[in-house]
Length: 284
Image (cartoon, rainbow, N blue to C red; front, top):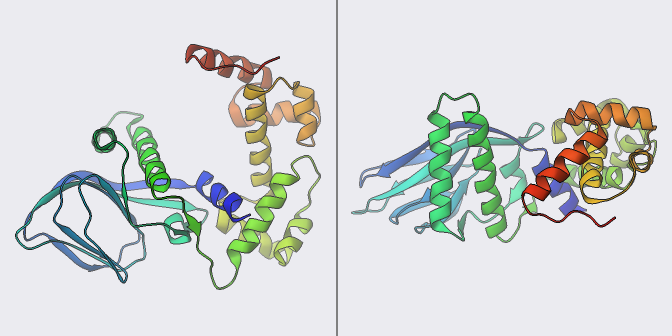
């Protein structure tokens, strides 16, 4: 259940980049006892740095990604007589009102699989951050997503922290219930009861965790599943509508609102893209 909750937290993550650059750290460079409301992501291009994150101390190596969560006291400095270079990105990654890296237990430093590729990605992120092109910030966010995926995957996975009030368990229970009842007429009262909250309070609680109301989230999950079915299976549009507990008319209308295309148009377009990329289509 926690894995499902974690996957949903990450899927609902909203990124904002506040700064990104290449930086050479001289022998006198340091930031001591800093408390920021944004996360820091470093990609180390050399060695000689000393980082303290809370009570933990790290000496990152060349070719490592480092994440320093928002709201954590940290110090970063160059070791005596040393210099090193790095790429860095300051960002927020929120799921609802909660900062993602305050919810996750992860290692602080991870080795990347391909140092040249990671350096290229981070370099492109920085270039797009400073570009004035229309799509530049969107591309920078996509590159940051890729780097964060590398960090989470190379770190051996991540775990959700367990707050004292048990809110993660409550959200996990509700998200798992929604995923297993996409075809059912689930009510707000049923979901609130799972979390042991009054329905009015539950709406605020759920939105603070996911960024969406319970019904908005459920409809989003239905459409995500339907998009997958359109591309990877041969089920009819009527069958897809039935699987998410909707009439054919309502399903087609909602699908177009979420994707900009009708279910049949979406299926045709996505399958054409897969063929062009040499990917297999589902067997009839």
